[in-house]
Amino acid sequence: MMTKHRTSKLFSGLSAFPLTPTDAAGHLQADVLCRFLERIHAAGADSIGLLGSTGGYAYLRREERQRAVRVAVECVGGKTPIIVGVGALRTDEAQTLARDAKMAGADGLLLAPMSYAPLTDEEVYQHFAAVAEAGGLPLCIYNNPSTTKFTFSDDLIARLAKLPNVAAVKMPLPANGDFAGEIERLRAITPDSFAVGYSGDWGAADALLAGCDAWYSVVAGLLPSPALALTRAAQAGDSSAAARINDAFRPLWELFRAFGSFRVMYVMANLLGLARIEPPRPILPLSQEAHSRVEEALQNLKSVSSSIP
Image 1: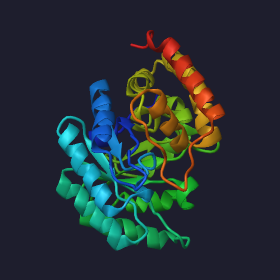
Image 2: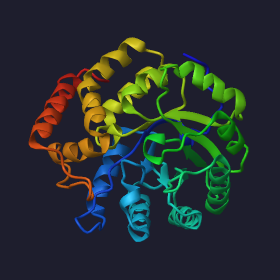
Image 3: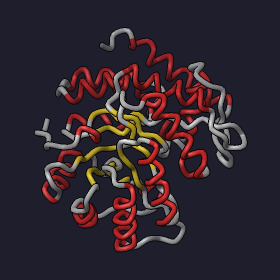
Image 4: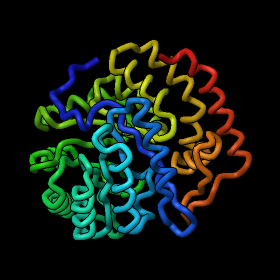
């Protein structure tokens, strides 16, 4: 395992990304959100990624996003750090969301370059500079080309890492699977305090074993304990334990890749008895056949849970 840099604790370890439960009109179900967050805190996750892609931030009005942050701070603030997604199509809207998050008591920010018209590197740089300054909190670059259709170059990440408050990057899984090479390359062009983490749950074990700073996890939003066990095993360099736990997750990873983790998480919330919620339209609930496959995947994971420390 590679030696870690002296990165900010805020953007290290397991960051759990919960759903944002709403009714059909898009109004937050505060009690359900708090239930999710308390479950994450009780498991011992290192941070909470509120209003990320799993949190459906793009489908929520400003008022509901404000309310979600207030509820989260009231529920677990001061106990588990809260990183809030503030992505928006317009720079001024993202600046407002960043100020809202800071005012409500968030600990950090996560920003994706949402767009309709394709963005240039300079447009993204100026967008991030403005939002980082407005928010005044440690900010993580969200490199998520599967949804934003924008890919951050190494040069742009290096340039952004020099900005005040820009402290981390959340990377997609490398196409060639070379986590160690990519981490080494990014660390060579960014400050020692800059954190390199990954999303894409099925690659988390490999990323952590390669020495990344953080796993930004979808599944930990509902299953924080086994996700934390995987994180700690990989952080300790215990490849055998990490492989064993990851194998238990594998049927779920396959469903995430087949249907999209966002859709599968809504099924999981229902099957786990944590909430009766559906994804925001136009996203449709999965079929009953998919429900059965998710239930089987959860049973597979449950069968090994007793052996997870």
